[in-house]
Image 1 (cartoon, rainbow, N blue to C red):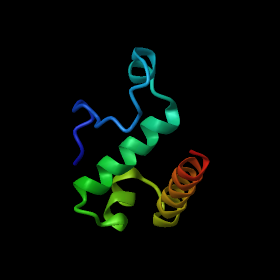
Image 2: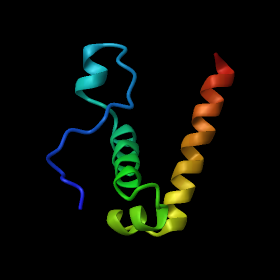
Image 3: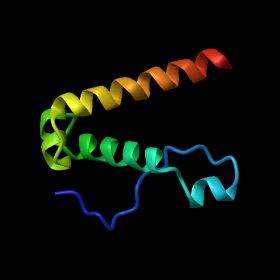
Length: 76
């Protein structure tokens, strides 16, 4: 089981103090998802169960994240 009181690893770039103190809800959601996947040893089905979502929802969220990351990389 995931310890909700444990600190989340930062996936938000530390552009300034405000960005790290107040990450967006999307950034927090992605951190939580990645933490669940790590806790489940990479097993996405188990991670989805831990999160209370369908595995397809988890896969769509991860695919959307990959597309955003790829778009940001291409824009640079």
